[in-house]
Image (cartoon, rainbow, N blue to C red; front, side, top):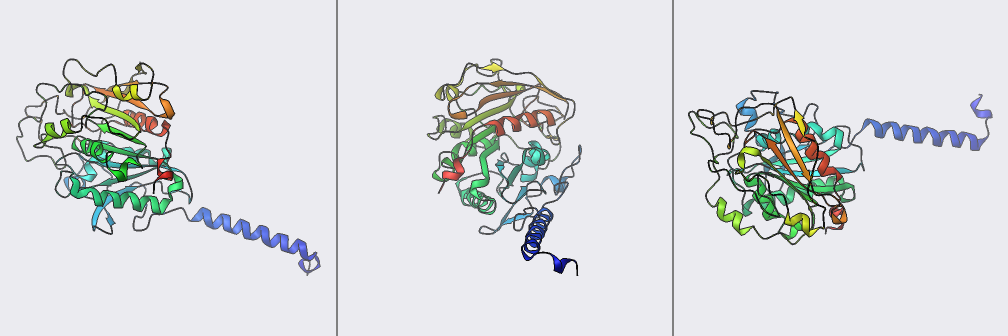
Length: 357
């Protein structure tokens, strides 16, 4: 009876407030979720800190790309809000490897919540990327963008280890990716602006047991030729970060200059503080340890890394080199150096996806 005595406009106002409150409550209870890719905490098939089971490492992914019917991994914050801005990353494994090995070699899935990352990690059934995979990769990108909305993609980065890095180098020269990619992180997959020399003994040691699941083999046939063919810089503009192990390079180490940095009028190379990791990475090549070859990779261990940046690049782009000290080609990245790379990525200018057709 008390409510009926209130003026009509007051009742209507109270109803409107209640509707808004209900809508906000309902929205808070329903975070964004990709179709066919339910979110999980911890992420599905996450490796333990050590001794990841073989069947887990070689898993090709749980999400189905509906046009090619191939699978991949899609990691994102489980509390992602509709319309929230994200950084989108397509992470490519090396030759002979698997999506879930790559997912833990460069474990940015551990930072998806903190830095609001959407990470697609595909898998090549032939274990080596080629032009035949381009449709599958494009479909993954299109799906993520369609679901999130291109206006909510702050930046789109390619990440590739070894032959996955070479593939990233090829992709940024194609029409589809050149108009969308804001940055490329090369994990021992070639350096734009002048690559360091390879260690004389680079390559896997003698295998004494079956090759570890997902661990990359020796560089595939045609590796050197492919690198030569991609030596000329891409025509499109994007940020570039190169990461490598100290033992992968010859005695000259990392070049002190970068033609890619010069292209964007960056400042002279600046050495940042050393990154110190007290924890190990998740994965490594367990079958190439007797005898071990430091250039290929040793057992997981804590480590240090040196970060070199070229400051004040034109148009807000980032150019940087990261050297993991006393590391080779296959030791999975440790948590602190992984996070430092993520910080560099999210600090760079993005926005290409909004202009892409």
